Amino acid sequence: MAKSKFEYVRDFEADDTCLAHCWVVVRLDGRNFHRFAEKHNFTKPNDSRALHLMTKCAQTVMEELEDIVIAYGQSDEYSFVFKRKSNWFKRRASKFMTHVVSQFASSYVFYWRDYFEDQPLRYPPGFDGRVVVYPSNQTLKDYLSWRQADCHINNLYNTVFWALVQQSGLTPIQAQERLQVDEVMTKEVRLPAEMEGKKMVVTRTRTKAVPLHCDIIGDAFWKEHPEILDEDS
Ligand code: DGT
Ligand code: MG
Ligand code: MG
Ligand code: MG
Ligand code: MG
Image 1 (cartoon, helix red, strand yellow):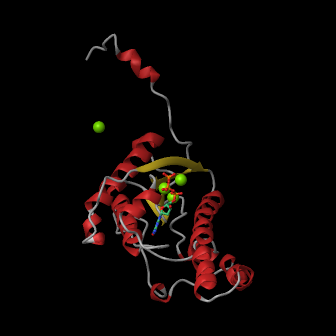
Image 2: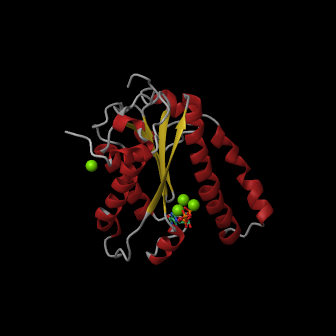
Image 3: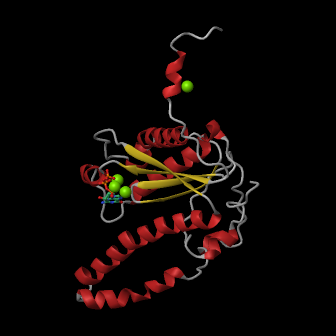
């Protein structure tokens, strides 16, 4: 087919190919979920319906899209890691990001009723997305650790801190001292009892994505799941 004289406009498209052999991470985040949580009567600080819905959406993304090896989520955000050698859509960042975010957002609406039952969805939620590439296993693990540490700091710490102050009558300083034991979070921890002895297969894109609620900062998780960072998976 002959090229039209208009073909040249393609040259205006920017090249957004992700650097070869790097881990590609897409992180999405709910738009103005401060308001969304209020309008939908989310319980504070954690609404288990909302969190489980987020995880259902992440599972859907992992099952519908190619080459995602792990996803990590907290609050109104989720990160998806594409394998280093993925050549999905020729590694175009915009393709990775838009497919992840649109699949997630439509799933959020599609599965809303399964989790919120008698709480109607009052307006369409939105999510932003970004792509970051990480050049080594260590930087990827540090990225995921950063997100889990963020979760820990924002969520667990504040929850327990205010419970100690408001419900147990401790002073803020006493509560802070009590929470010093949080240091153990940086040590290697065991997987939850229900996961022990279980063999998990997560290397194939089309296998079922399984939600785990465990520490990913320590080495135990990564030793238990060497396939995630395996270059040839
Ligand atoms: P953004 O992301 O800049 O558009 O604005 P927000 O409001 O989404 O801010 P962000 O993402 O930094 O913070 C997440 C908000 O979502 C935060 O205000 C608390 C709310 N949120 C997330 N999960 C829960 C939950 O389980 N329960 C309640 N009550 N609120 C939650
Ligand atoms: Mg934000
Ligand atoms: Mg948000
Ligand atoms: Mg957020
Ligand atoms: Mg098309």
